[in-house]
Length: 133
Image (cartoon, rainbow, N blue to C red):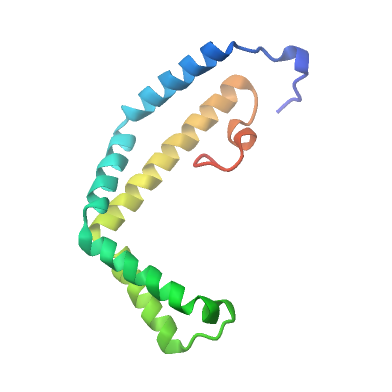
């Protein structure tokens, strides 16, 4: 993109920016992707079996943390860790949540691309680390 001079940038008042933020958030919240993400998040939050599987995996990672950092964990320990990870990742609610999250991320990246094109700047790169880039 061309380098834009400071005098070429149109600046909006803070109230206009906040109104645009609210409008964008409201529009995003109405998308199928956002609604699916919220629904799958709720389902995952209430899936006690999935939460227990995640807890078991995290506990194992924590107990093996030093050994893993030193690359000193045994094959059996690594296999147990992988089994616990797969036990969590293969749950239907986890897979649904991950798919919904990926769909929402794609939508946000597309929106960032549209914003970038409209303002003549790489929006996602200007914002730093985010779901958009």
